[in-house]
Structures are given as structure tokens and as C-alpha cells.
Length: 339
Image (cartoon, rainbow, N blue to C red; front, side):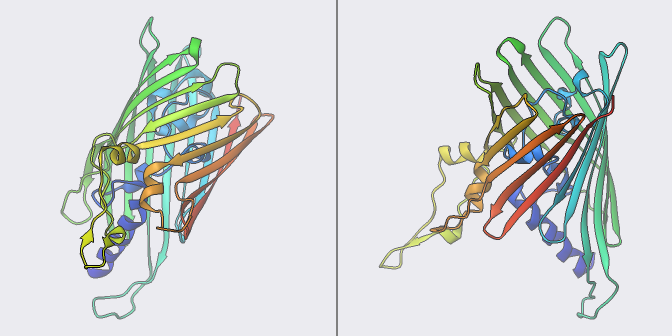
């Protein structure tokens, strides 16, 4: 693989490292936030069990009859010239008790100027990736448990190199309607490359997520608590830029303890007026906030917010996520009831 493509891979790995256990996997776009709703609630939510078909792109156990004939289309103006988006649709049959879900997620990395090993200009090139998914969920008879699965077909093209892969998402959700309480777990991106970019097989970003959410009694607020990347406990790291030097030249490194690791896995979010035609969403991603914060300068890293408005059979959503003082993204979404 020539130098320009190696540089391209390094760029992609560093770009997505802020939201992933970064630099270890290919197809990192699979863990991008898929909708404004999810972005506003901190980036990863797996416990919504309602009309929103985009939720099933992350947790197939959420597929349910309320999604019938719902179409969701989302777009993100990401960092630099990178753009990505998603679309999802669900359809029910068999007396509206069985639902099949289909979705697509894509990312376009834009145009790059090409140079050879000697620095001579060559042709420009681009990069893009896409994943197509089909999913289904079932209720375990006479219980409140729901089980679901997605199968994803993944295609990636980076300059002249391409790769194809396949993956599964498996989810389980407990829905206790009396308390309006949802508890869920999902194992995402269980799969492999079928064809490689250049002979070497690379792992894809497997992730285990747990979540719980509930609407408060007599208060129009739904809270969300999510624990991401549970397949790796120690995801915190000491930042050398935060080393402290005393007057004698001794260096003290940043210390990472158990509490630090717990919070690096944690995302919190709330929805105000979750059942109404207008709602407000707020979230905080602790790992994003900690890893991207600037010492002695407030940058609001990790904070996200958004809203949605329902207009007859159309719901419009917008969210804004702050990554650092130099980077933020806007998320746009439309949910259409086609019935």
C-alpha cells in the first residue's frame, strides 16, 4: 500500500478516535451516531422503543409495530468536508404483529489531492463507505423481553482500494410498561471482512452497550443512562499533555482510577416532553468531554442538545454536538409517517 493511502488511513483513524476506542479497527463509520435524536442524547442510546426506525440501526431489539410505515432520513455535516447520513424504514405484516426493518448508513469523505512517494501531484481521489442492513425482532411469548437481530452488508472504497464485509447486531430489551421502564443490551458489529483492502484482514469495531431509560411519573421527562464500550473495561488513558512538572523537574503523570474508567463508559441524556409534538433533548458524553477538554479553558466538549417538532405526519429534528473548541457537528433529520 503506497504512502498516500497510509496517510489516508491515519487521517480516518484520528478523525473517529474521539468517539471510539480508536485506531484499532476498520469500518469505524459503523459506530457513527445515526440520528439527531441519538446525537442530542449523548451519541449512543439503545432504549427507545417507539415510532423511530432509526433506533433499530443501533439496537434491533427495538423493532416494534409502532414503526410500521415510518421512514426516517438523516444527514450530518461532519468535521471538515466529511458528510454522512442514514435512512431507515419499517413495515409490518401478519396482522401488524411482525415487523421487518431495513436501513442504510453511508459516509462520504470528500475529495483528496493525490501525490506519489516523491511528492509529485497525481490524480485526485475520494473515499466512501456504506452499510445496508435488514433486521427483525420478536417478543418472547408471555414475557416483557424482546430479542432482535440485524444483518449488515458493508462496502468500503478508499482511493483505489476496496473492501467488503458482513456483520450482525444482536439485541435484547426488557419493556416494563407499568413503570415506562426500558432496559437493554446490544452486541454490535459481530463480523468480519470478506475481502480486504490489501491482503491483511482487519477487525471491525465490535462493541457491547447497556442502557436503561424511564419516563418519570407525573413529570414530562424521560432520562437515559447508557454504558458504551463494555467489551473493554480500561478505556481511559493518561494524557501526557496533562503531566505536571515541579520546581525540581520531577514529572507527575495524570492518574487514572476506577472512577475515571466508570465515567469514561457513561453517557447521560434527558428528553423533555417526550410524548408531545415538541420536545427538547440534552445529553453529555463523559468520555468525549474528558478526552477532548482543554486544560484551564472551557470548551463544552461532550455536551449535545437538540429538539424535534411534529407537523401532522412529519417530524423535524435538529441537534448540535460539541466535540472540542475547534470541532462541532449539526445533525438534521426527518421522520415521515407514510400510512
